[in-house]
Length: 499
Image (cartoon, rainbow, N blue to C red; front, side):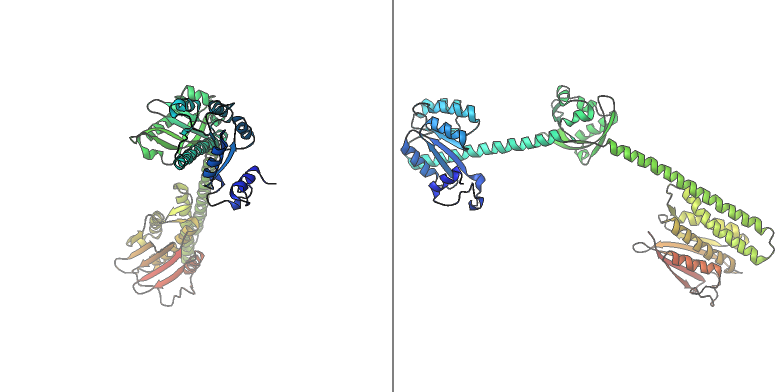
């Protein structure tokens, strides 16, 4: 079944598809640009001529009525974008017809198109609510061109106003149903809360009406420390960048954490005179953050306690080895016990550093080696007395506990080996420990001495001693490679990747 506009379209444009029923048949300018007009005039000839002229433009469709009563009947059942009306008509005249249209159809555009003298009716019809007035004249083409122009202006203005109202209605619907608090506040020349969404009452206990009556409430409910942040925003435009975290005091005294995202309102001179934005309740998030901090603090304390107990247990083992060595006379056995104590000390020192430092998972390698070499010097007494230690480690290099223990044991074995065997009768003995960061996550550890050099029969691929076996196995454990240079003294290099 075809619609009424389909019949009208076929009368004017021939038997083809109606755009209202078949949008695909619509020209490129689209259905939304069509102007549907009701023209009422008691002169049938004027109706025919005007309709014919206006419908030359395919965007305009015209329906006609001979009386105001007929026009009002059509307005009850059909939708129009504008009305064109004669002024002097039998029965209900143009002025009365205009008042009825304004009363029943609101802002529907009305153009008075009459042969009456302009001066006698212009003020009356404009005061009654006509959008335009046009006097019929002899120059038909010019008057119809002007009529079409007035028609377009009136319809476009109404459509723009309707679009604005719809947009405002959508925004208000969104704002008034949002969980977040949406607001607009002006500070200068006087403090005014232009708008604050209803959700503020559920959050704070204060109604939007209370903010309208007492605009200062917007700032009074901000916890005192946060008021300075708000004042800063009006002095420094950059302070408005990013979210602002504040505490609000609710009506019942409850403290609420909110995150505000603000946009400045500028005066003509560029100064900030107000702000508009969104405030979100983040009290639950803040509570979760506090609980996580407490949990992390508890975890850190527990880990520190574990490191402390491991260190103490290792020291007990070291002490037991020392006590056990007091009754041993065999030099080889004593040396083995002393080497074991040094290895235990290197591990215990890692745990001692971790339980005392800010970080419970990362060890500063430079600090660790300084402390460790001091302990080794004390252990080897006369053998280490004249040895110079050169430590070249970037103070920013840190490792995790697994890598730290492995590297500490490697350094212990290599330095101990130098102190025991490298400097028999040699002048200016020196041990160099160096750690450098290469490309990416690759590091290089080197331990060298200027002693007599390691025996040529030693093969690091098939080590024959416990110490070198440990060095080889620990290097493999951290995914590294081990090389030995005998050119000048002994120079071990470990290259590895660390996280």
